[in-house]
Image 1: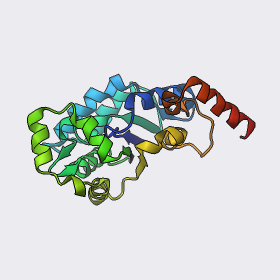
Image 2: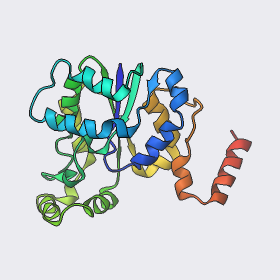
Image 3: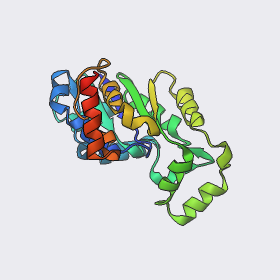
Length: 228
């Protein structure tokens, strides 16, 4: 089975991504792609990740987790999305890095799904706009500590990706820029679902329509129709 995790990384509009994916739920099901509702697994995943910090997964942990998530649904590929997988918002910036335990977390998930093909999807965003938005909801004492131990001029997403590659070299990681997302939204959805390029889906312009006027979207769609 292929288990696909969208980490959220507090960069992408996670709820909008799930909404776009869920528009295709029935079509995906016919292709053996399961898209469980987030309410079914996000808290369960959070608890599982906490447990993995202290113990190796038991032999039946994977089956128990998937049985709870899929609820008897049969699938070859499972799409899951949960921002706190890499870290909670309070520890997005810690130890002078973005998601300092990301590599360890992915490695733990790989142990959990050791008989499956694990894939990771995440967005990266310019730290100059990313950090203010994330840190605005972090308790003052944790924010002060995180900033005190961080050289913001040296902060790089490549450090986060490098440690994921170091801890889990066999796990495919798909990364895109948050700033590009409105124009590649359909590509992100297809890649997560394992579809071929250009395959028809619903919700491919969902994020673009969030930042364009109705008139702009009308002209955009007219242009695409006239010049496919």
